[in-house]
Image (cartoon, rainbow, N blue to C red; front, top):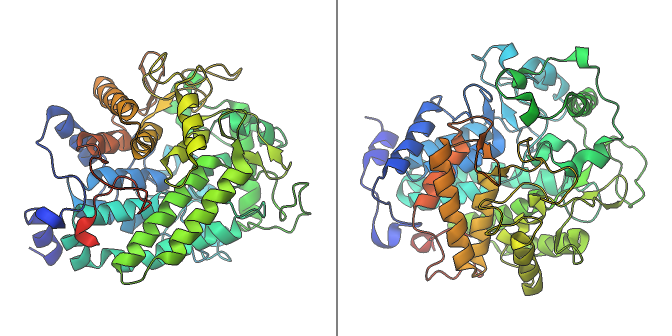
Amino acid sequence: MDRTAQLSARPRPTGRAVAYDPPVAATPLHLRAAQVLDGNWTGTSTVPSHSLYPHQWSWDSAFIAIGLRHVSPLRAQTELETLLAAQWGDGRVPHIVFNPSVPLDAYFPSPDFWRSSTAGRTAGAPRTVQTSGIVQPPVHALAAWLVHCADPVLSRARGFLPRLHPRLAAWHRYLLHRRDLGGGGLASVVHPWEQGMDNSPCWDAPLARITPAPARSFRRADLDHGAAEDRPTDLDYGRYVRLATDYRDRGYDDDPGAPADSGGGRGTGAFAVEDPAFNALLIASEFALARIAHELGATGTARRARAQRLTAALVERLWDPAEGMFLCRDVRAGRPIPERSVSGLVPLLLPGLPRDIVTALVRTLGGPRFGLGDSTRLVPSYDLLGEAFDPHRYWRGPAWFNTAWLLERGLRLHGEQPRADALRTAALETADATGFAEYVDPYTGEACGATGFSWTAALTLDLLHEPFGHGVSVPGNGTFGTRDKGSE
């Protein structure tokens, strides 16, 4: 038995060395969630779904690691290590790492579309693994810290944080410098797929500027596994393909030298948006990097200060007091996007928000536009009263488990325990009833998309552990969901 296997087989540390919630007794739901992750494990990473998503996805792996740490801290560490091994030289973490054993026609866009090793050569794309050229929300430092806290003894023995820290720091530098396209300190996404909520109505206005790629120029593999009425339209997909093609053909350059937009930002391509959830997750991960730095012997002061500055920039640029939530900002047009999506509620997870903003977000969450605790049990991805609302179509209304997890943590962080408890219960019951569905109808809980979905199973495992926050002072450390006294 090798050294890491021996460490993994040891009993979990107890007392002060336990950095997060203690293990809970296995329940049928706990076991079924673990079985989903076992079934989707490839040996080095976890696919979201073997049928629909047969490769490694960036923010999926971060959420998966957060759940895996409860059943195998070693596998959780490996999940993140595999992803970050495919990082580009400029610091970006690609949104897909392709499995070479999967046929090219199993997923589109496939490696031969992205051409990462050639088109991305100037940006430092790896030569030995094929990836996409765009990114996804930066949950990774938060995931790395939580994984470390699950078994600090194993983490320290394997040098987990010392090896990941430089990669995570480079990832954040890329976002904070190369992606500050609006000039206001926030990171921009340059494709809807980067934000993770791929088909949100928030993208409709910026996408309307894009001439779609001809339908005959690509084949949608997603329609082989999902109902067309649940998926993006062909017109939307054509625009996604055009954006990705143009980005690839300019060598994945984030600053192509176009004239500054009317909002005073740097040159951008045809699509550049500051998104509240993307930046909130960056801020949460900055706080986590501060904890990682402290674990490695530094103070973490600069990271905490940066997270606080980013929180102030988020409020200044994206908060809309009249709407009671954050809005996306179209960098090219220089104005907010007047669509209400769950992304505008996700900043609730941040510890440094002014109290009046927290109060307004909680009110909006339970109000008629999202209906949590009234007309819905899980948070819809889009405004229930919006013209574009569709309870089944991808990110245009259905409820997702990763946003439920983020908002449950945010509610608990800010002392909204009854609401957090109700959301936790609803998420667990819905995951159980739907066979760990990818997403669900927010009114009925009907399963949509794939079942046996990895982040649903992983976050179920996390929610099955004792809810954090009982007797824990969170605002001082800025990282929600951790009990890390053993690593102070």
